[in-house]
Length: 332
Ligand code: ATP
Ligand code: MG
Image (cartoon, rainbow, N blue to C red; front, side):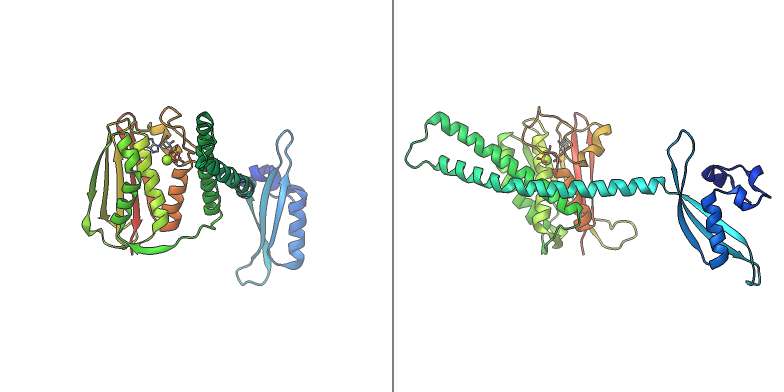
């Protein structure tokens, strides 16, 4: 017997195979394996490349096992199962490439840090200029060197964070804290940017959310990015609403969750671009609205929320009307 998938996989025709000696009907390697099996009587595993003229070789994984007669004594045949290995090989190759890219990135970023530290230190020293020796115009240049250096530092930190996270080497320090306090601290730190753009901020914080177990620094990082995105991607004089509340457990869980949302009435994101927001180095809205971003932060946020806290982060957005970012985390 032979099924039609096997006909295609082994490149043979049923009418030629059924009734024929398997040495003639099957590819040589398969026939050899069956011979082998006759001797050992155990299950054989093998890989096989089938070359079809004019096409790439096809890789098959084979498992050949003896069929026993009902009383289990004598063998009555063999079952040959073929699996297409093409896809799993490609996935494997992509995984290896991804790991290589991560190693490379983390090496390069580490190496960049040392010279950059010197650049920062020397430009800071020049800016201090207690003797008043640095001419005004130079000061301006040095300020630019310093602020661009800081931007590069941020990019390096982000890349390092991300490669560490992807390699599963990120450490989280969990503490018990009131999430509203974290929100308060984030709002405080971003108040200058908020005021600069004359945005109106509304806080809708549920006082009863209670203490939660969170990696406070990491959640601060998440909320800082989401909130600063809301400020950045909303034209001046916009409204931003931050809310927190207890929410239903995730499906198949009984642990209640914490839901934090940051809603803006800014430029919004087109539906076809929503998924790209969480991609690395992806900036949906280009340089017009800001020049200092790296496009890595949302990818980092997703890692922190999902891997670090077993939660979910998602966006709802309408182009030209605004964006809502939701962070939901189970709280023990
Ligand atoms: P950085 O890494 O410095 O934060 P960034 O803000 O550009 O840079 P992300 O925070 O990762 O990068 O966001 C990715 C992209 O998603 C942004 O460039 C922007 O196009 C889009 N985006 C994120 N939040 C909003 C928002 N509230 N409104 C509109 N677009 C947004
Ligand atoms: Mg951002």
